[in-house]
Length: 634
Image (cartoon, rainbow, N blue to C red; front, top):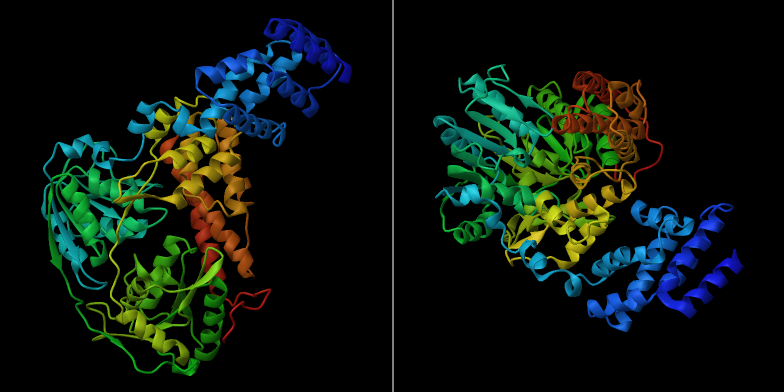
């Protein structure tokens, strides 16, 4: 083989591009006896680097010698470092060159695409870079721009009645939409409306319920998660309600709030949230020539910061107390300690617990079946809890690989859950479990809240499709990287990097599957924990069958979560079961978008019910922990 390469190099050097056919015939001869290997790819790249057509391409696009060298290094790395698991189109081109079906110049289009990825600002068309960037988000929603909408911002702390006032307007009009931050809240408003005689449908990523019970008779009122709100203008509303508007600065989901504020087609829009979001939302509303009235609310019941902690003494825990901790291990250790000392069940709520279980645990606490609750910051949104006293077990939270102090806004939102209006308690109280944390709690509660300065936005499918026209052979994860590096943003907006990171991670894992950009985008935004092997293995299985046009049936879903399962005996097993529930949620989410290939929602819902029963049973006994707490103070 070495002699063959030497002969080809000499031929190219002596005769230039006119000898491409001789070169191709040489590779074809070799391929009859030998498999295409990494060394062959290296030889082809060496030949390609000597092509006269490469120099012509450089002159045509004003590529300097240094730029050519830089792109060639990237191009070689793209091929050799990932061989043979590179982009399939590129691999096939190289293989065809080796077998004699194509000549070396066929690499030019791949090289040019690599050049554009390496130097997007220099080589991409000016029209694409100017039109496709996220510089003017209001223009994305022409239906809303044709309306003259009126905004009312209900600004206030937790338990101030602001959402109640907004919902009063929502239920009084002929056609309305409520945009919830969580499916639990969407379900609560759906239920409340129908109980009060206002027929209302519910739409979340995983299910669509009809207040009339008849899918062919949609209601005029809709309670939906904020991501599911229709901003196309197909349906116009008299009143829209957008809840928890401060989420507009969230690094993963903030774009959904920006989207409905800019694009919801409603005559009157009521926004509920903390006062910290008033300025940025007013700036956005002003930018489209619309008006916003601001109404301020105070707490309906006072919140008292106690001058004493519990001093680390569990005997001072009383009925109606909620201890707040920030790790699953700590939450379950506290639960076990309290149940041992108090001889009664302790409710738990945390982010990884399925929403239906959080509601069930909340109900046990509210009706006093469980006298005490231990919870994470998940209680800060979406649950109505009759809490007498919030007790911070720690003022620090582990997040993204490091431990950090709670922010003032975060602390106030959690503390504000104490003293719910119309509960049995005349006021709410807040303190700490350990004396050394009390001064920090008081400081954080006294700090002035910072105002949000930017609103989140994300890459839409339509924008990515436009961008891909410049890079027709580039996999989606590379497209997103280039998009991120070239994006030009209005100063009032930021790119939701946590969301973008998820999209890049998932599209990279699925890069070798035969998926259209539309389908790859769908999988990339799926509600899945991409740090969980349970969830990602299931997503990979689903996408692999989907790419072959094979339906994903209930049996495949069961296999993906290793069904059947038994009640968990360790925290690790419980976490895996929670992730199994997320996998079933993922299946239902995909069913809503591609019902032909995810055709078995009945099995999925049955699995959910069984998983809830298993998780519920697992919360009753004390779960064994295989290792000590990282931050043990019990």
